[in-house]
Length: 614
Image (cartoon, rainbow, N blue to C red; front, side):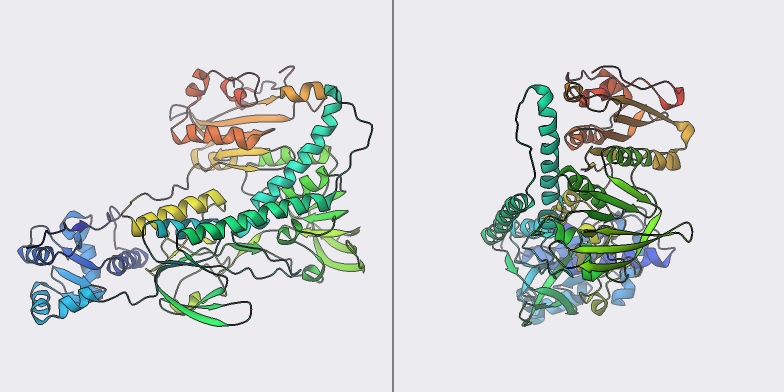
């Protein structure tokens, strides 16, 4: 007799599930169908049942690996069995599935073995072209696809960039690489170098020639770097035997997708599982002239000419970052703000970001929204007239700009990929996809990662982590889920803002103000002192839960290299950072990060936090 592979226990059930609500019952049904879909042989059993034992012994004698869910060993197994009976019309165990075909109980499984049907089902080739098709070649999609391929699965990536209204498109890699984090940080660096040139005179550098910035030189260098990244992604997919198809993916029926290339040629592919990683694209205002004459971040980083005098519409981090580096390379920049800056971020920090930008020449038009954009002159750039109205009254205003950059938010790319044809639910208002704690949609074989997820952070490293872990759970018997708590991030405005954990507003909402202690201070980077740059501008703040050992639940810094500082403290927060641990840590002098090891003044004390030296 051949050696018998052990039965594998199905992935742990969610604890304490109660089927008192229709929603909970539907979630339970979805997970059951997922187990049936994901496993070649799936046995719903009870550990003490002799009939269940006979079925397990049969598969072991055949040398066939099987997965088990012992209903007497999971929380609320009775509810599981009840929903299972609705799916199968069978109320007893064992309840056996082979290649998604319901075999039935012990007697029927043995009958199928004696007739040869069981062997035929076990030998049945996969009915699909691929184990996994990923729709979207951005950070999350590529991470998931490559991890699945490493685990031995047959994988395809479909990626197609629909050109922006201005005709801009790009290569493999998604928003971050092509029109997001990477070019944004490089243009931010260009602006910082301009500031460094100014500072350098105070440090003894002498030069007579007036320094000026060349937009074309910068964009060409940045686009060359991005091109090299696009190529490296394609090479990496090829090395891992992932099929890359530059076509637009759209579901046509269950497990089947239509891929349409630039020439309009259509090809259909099937897969056992799908991951939606289509990301988002910039939103437009829906006013006269917006798509005809305005640009977005999709267009800015490869713009073949200097944008000149620019109106940035919006107060998102994209808006403020773009306004910051455009002003930093010497352009006349105005930001039109409908309501608050950096919605969702700590508002004290957001206002400090805005104040610094205003002090350094960026104009802000608050409480206004554009209602019309009109072209006055063609050109590269041309001239545009913008008419705006107040959000608080009848007042209107007009302005003339060379470029209007819209940064008012982003919309999920989920409405035109056929999700309705297979029943995947989306939030009709936002287009976001609701998923459970393992990134699974309401259709068991369809998953989603990245910016399309409802209620999750829209950050590249989050998408990468979620994509990798999803592939490992689906194909590698791993259990780890993506942790969306205490994710650090940085806004790369002229003065960078880094944060991890809760904003002060959110902390007060969750824990109540009287249960919190906020430590804060201004600080003056040593590098700024000789250069004569702003004292009492950089700012550090931590929010502590007084009744949990003064655990740090919010970390905030406004200053140079905020991202580098925040990344280190984020690890500490994962480990349960407390105020005492910060006090016990010896700082590195002279650095900006050391300020967190010497925080003494609380907001509640009302004491002055101004700094007199480094």
